Length: 286
Image 1: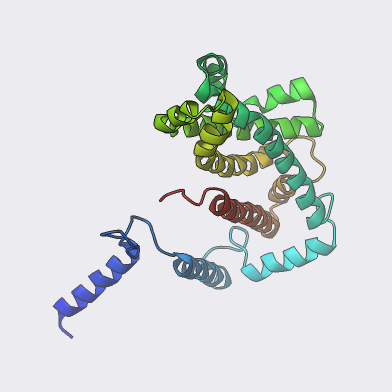
Image 2 (image 1 turned 120 degrees about the vertical axis):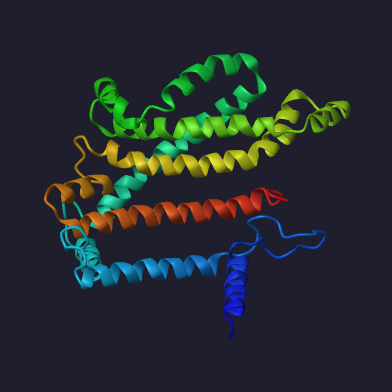
């Protein structure tokens, strides 16, 4: 085979990977990013795990810094049955889930209405926009001491800290969703006799729903990243507490295990949110 043929074959392979997806009926060209990527994701995950196995088992990196997958799995089995740092793996996981999803639920029932109000009404936008935009870029660790001063060190402090991290992205996503409403739809609804509440519910809310769901996915991600900060102070149990306690005593296998568990839970929730998106907003991206 000539060098030119090899070059063309390699270029064709790259084109298949990075090119547009298959052309749908009515389209002249494939839409950017369309097509299934599951097989590529599976291969990527297998390669990462394989590289981890080789690097750790052949001790390219010292076990203190990179434990083997076998040792991490052994810790997973052990801590599932025996307490570590105040509880079993289920105790840590259930407590963290309670904190994150309690904050997420509170954010859903407050941030979404606030975001919609900011997009619909200029008075609401003038009231809520300054405080949200002020605290949104501030890392949760910066106002962690303030939440302790105000709320103490019980569960309300931890849930409030996670709630603040989730609230801003969800509110801003809902506000951005209102901007996507077509004014022609609103005019048509009013001309057919719809009330203001009917327009808000049937036109504005449904048009903003894709952005709201995206904001929920982003918000829960912020919630998990804030979990460790929330469990830094006076927590007796929790995944973040377990990881921090293990890091203090250089038990790297438990640190890796905790990170994997947190990432797996967050990823499963994200997959569930994608399914909800397909059911509630099947027109998104079309």
